[in-house]
Amino acid sequence: MHGSLDDLKVELDMLAPGAERIVGTSPPLDIIARDIVFGEGPVWDARAKQLYFTDIIGDTIWKWKPGRGLEVVMKPSFKADGLALDLEYRVVVAGWGGRTVFRIEKDGSRTTLADRWEGRKLSSPNDIIVSRDGAIWFTDPVGGLLNVGMVHEDLQRYNDKQPVFRISPDGKKMTLVTDEFTYPNGLCFSPDEKLLYVNDSRDRLIRVYDVGPDGSVGKGRLFHQYGGPERGVPDGMKCDSEGNVYCTGPGGIFVHDPSGSVLARIRTPGHHPTNFAWGDDDWRSLYITNIGSVVRTRLNIPGIPGR
Image 1: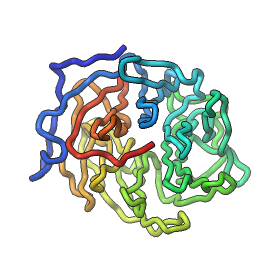
Image 2 (image 1 turned 135 degrees about the horizontal axis):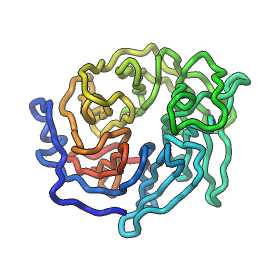
Image 3 (image 1 turned 60 degrees about the horizontal axis):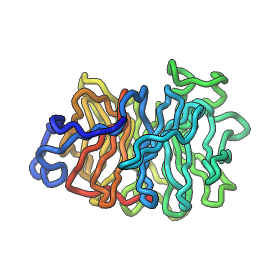
Image 4 (image 1 turned 180 degrees about the vertical axis):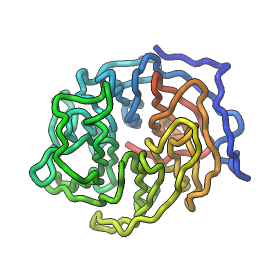
């Protein structure tokens, strides 16, 4: 089911001077999908003009196209979480419960890209991105072994670390990028891909890294530390075309300037955001996955154009 409820509006708070230029004053809120148990992993396919997203607990990868509605891409999905598109517009998947990173081929079959590190099973690949050179970057916390409704068959933990990994563009080499997190979750690049942002759900912070030409990163720096009693932790994270960083956090989606300062908080009443993705032809739509739904709003600054 999808539709537009004209009486719903996004609420904005924590507005810093000039924030309206980015988020507007009264963004709309459209309902894209209902009855999604735990929405995650949204990514917009600009070629096919459609949105992919996951329902982890619902064990399904979905796609939604304007005028056509929802369609199942994969069920069961092995409790899939984050999604991205590779250079050939194929969906690559952080296979949370299935403990793999895999690619969905054009014929619908699955190709495993990673399932082990130094001979031991991955824990639960969470979020995933693809850089311009075709390398695949993903976080591997242990939450898929613990969260009720999201676990798969094997609950044994084999790795002590909870790292960020990088799979080389040719798919032949996987390297550990950093492991200085208690619980790494969302990750994204700056517009020029010279900065990598990684957030930590348990410690409620974002770190930023300088990225070298070979895909290595420098020492992490604290970008922002969240506080407050409201529901929500750092989870989904994206940059816009100006380098502002958007991240889920206590009470909604925070918009940070490139220095880490909070410009605004986007609140979607009745919806608990888990992740989001830029989309539509002008990349100004923000598709937000929630516990229970998928919604869309419109902002003034476009996101980083994706595939």
